[in-house]
Length: 336
Image 1 (tube, rainbow, N blue to C red):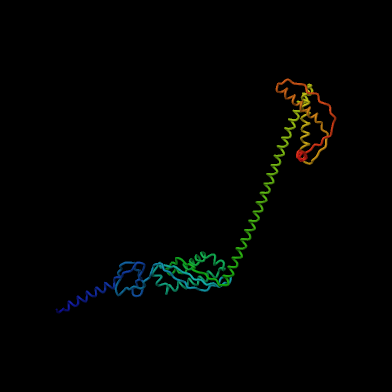
Image 2 (cartoon, one colour):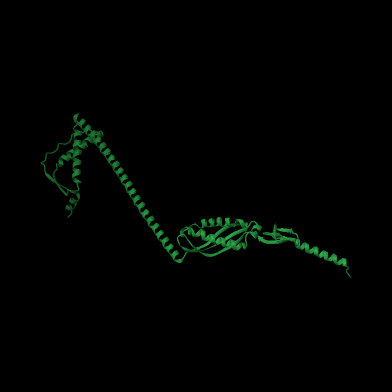
């Protein structure tokens, strides 16, 4: 088959149109932005999806990744405010917000962000003491983020966070800090022990005080009750004495005999139970005691309704001296 000149022109035209279409259709993946340049000048930014450009006149300038990216900051030496040399590293997270500014406002974007972060780490950490660095890492991160984000804002970049990964003081400084921490903990332990001992002494003193107060109150209550008991005993004794006195005044001899016999018996009982005497020599009229007991018996018969009988005449006997002997001593003397 022989192609004519017209057929060749048509085929060439079709091929050219296909090439033009392929050159003018641009597909932008998600998470990226393409800048378009017309004769070398920026005109617009292509969004993700299918886009058309003017072939041979417009071209793609820069393919910018607008996803959040991680930038590792290498370890570097930092001298603190108190002249302590430490080693630190960090990590930075940034995101491209304006693809045109990030492409045309700065060259070598990642290198620029890295150097900017490193210099600000030296500036921020160099203005702080070592103790402040070790205890205020969150404050350092916030300060770094604010400074670096303000610096990269003209580049269309947003620094989302800057984190200090590790701070390594010199080994001798770490040992000194460990000794300081140990001494501080021992000091706290001694203070707590002293406070515990003081509180224990205070509690013991309070307990002794309360015990003494309760003991004094108990003694006072006992003394009050003893006085009340003695008062009632005295009242009973006075009442009994008054009754005996009235009986004597009325001529009742049996009351006199009862009163005398009671006192006589109590005196003998107190002498016999004395603990400081083993042998007591005293005159005792046994017949008088028997007569007194007989008078008590007569009173009892009269109380229970029997006919009273006159007491038998008491035989006269010469007084004699009889030793009052302890029953235990008498028992030992009776044994063969």
